[in-house]
Image 1 (spheres, rainbow, N blue to C red):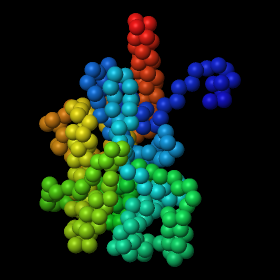
Image 2: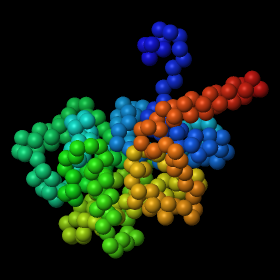
Image 3: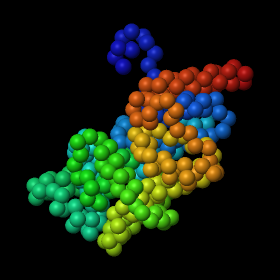
Image 4: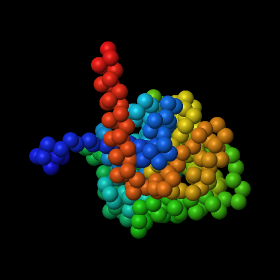
Length: 294
């Protein structure tokens, strides 16, 4: 910002997930589309426009404009970046209100850690919240006992996917997300998941059911938004099982768009920033022409 101001260079700031969305739109030649496009942008971390950490976002693209539609309901970010390296912290943040889950999670921490982290969860004066789908999957992986700490981001989600692939008899049942005006409530899902775990449903079945539920969530939001074109980006979209389920569940009634040459992770961001500036400029020209005409 300072460099741009000092040198009188125009500066355009592009939010992280909007850049993801713009990248997949551009790769699929959708920047000039006349039809609305739903953007499903799921990853681990991206700074949101409200100062919180985003990562479970839905956008719409209509008439050269991106609008934030809805997001995974916030949960508290525990210990900043440490949360990405310790899925047990995501599990604690997500399942803290469930006594059975708390009893299960307690053994993952020392007494000192347990006291400190729960104090941070309940007594922080200015908590930072997250809507991260990456951290959401991390928390589920930890609850299922397959990843409490990791050596790289995404490891827990990969283990969750690997567990789901072991499911020999996948069903059609899903966990419930509920849509409110501005966000996607996951509290029913965590309660139902914990119930399955208590009833000793095989963990691989639970893991598969989580993935299928995410595919159904996208359909639920698409119906709510009234769109027929859906584009996907963000690191979570490297999950092959999830992409397969999205295709299986949605391909008949929707046009689906994935990255072509770039990966869905952050390597596409710089391209997306350029694409965003391109269609924003087009929109501004249209607005200017409209103003002159009137």
